[in-house]
Image (cartoon, rainbow, N blue to C red):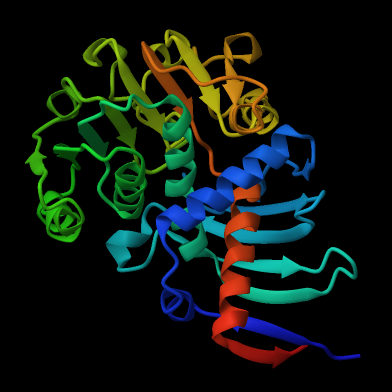
Length: 329
């Protein structure tokens, strides 16, 4: 028996005008459900067809009052930008928890971009200093942009954005795109990572995820009271940044430890279970409190829970505004 499915392209989603603040609020609700034990979410499984490339499958079910489910198939190919192709591509499927039917299929690159920045914003809500003024962004691609958008929602007094990217011209493009969102801030193009992180209140690394990382950002370069956020696994921050922090947090403890246990990522000094202060489920559910002083460090892997919360929001907005194309399966 055929049934109707809503198809939503990236262009369709763009027309909905969804804000970073809206997505942060949704993602925070999801983390709270995780902390209450209402989330079924296995760790990412994947295949790797080329060096440093991944194809992941990411299912998640959120029970309780939210009662929503979905699965993402997403690829990340660092060589793609040099070919004129996007680094991240994929699709996300909204599933009906009652019947298992697919209700919507939508572009996953949009979801991945925005929900990743939103998770950083939720973390900053609980661990960031209200006096934050200086943000250092290392890696000025999509995530460099989305993470700054999220920091703008959390820290109203940002006066300086420090930029580093090894690709020529990236800083100029980044400044042109992002300064309109922070017209009163100074954007500083930095020649190397050490200069970029110097005296910054928040440091966010957004480089490609690789199997053999250089870890080019050193803990000794960071000031004592700072927020260090990795959205690129262990590719940029050295182990001391995480293991020597006043507190180390991740988005999902089980997935972090599972990934570390498989022997590729988070090796050579990254914290084990005894070094974890919390995950964002515990924080957002109120089981543990955030820390506002010292070096607070986080690895935010990007989890299927964030996709479900963001994808469901997109679906609801699309229904309200009659956006998308109905197809029959």
